[in-house]
Amino acid sequence: MLVVYMGKTIRSKEYAVFIERMKKAREETGLRQIDVAKKMKRPQSYISRVESGEYRLDILEVKEFARIYKKNIDDLIK
Image 1 (spheres, rainbow, N blue to C red):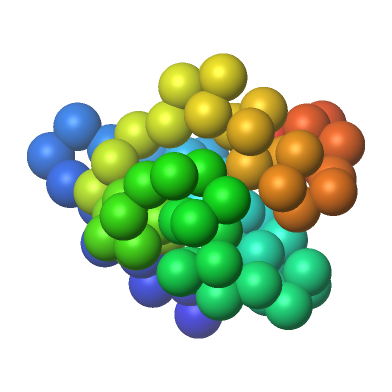
Image 2 (cartoon, rainbow, N blue to C red; image 1 turned 30 degrees about the horizontal axis):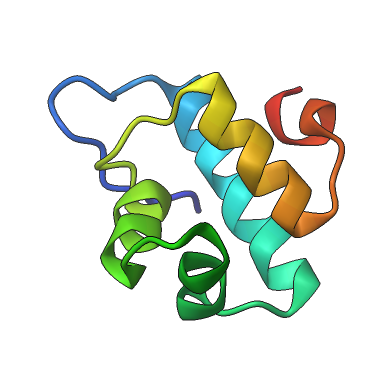
């Protein structure tokens, strides 16, 4: 069962699926949220907000996550 908190402006099922792909990609690389945050020079709370659906990513941020996770951006947004 897919359960993702979606804030007022981020409610689509499609975005929830995207967020699940992002989280899975992180887990497959063996990285913790804090590891990703350090690589991005952001607080761990940023990664948490992304993965909970509280923060909506723009394409440049998705590109950065794909680089860190060593994934093709298409794998994350398909």
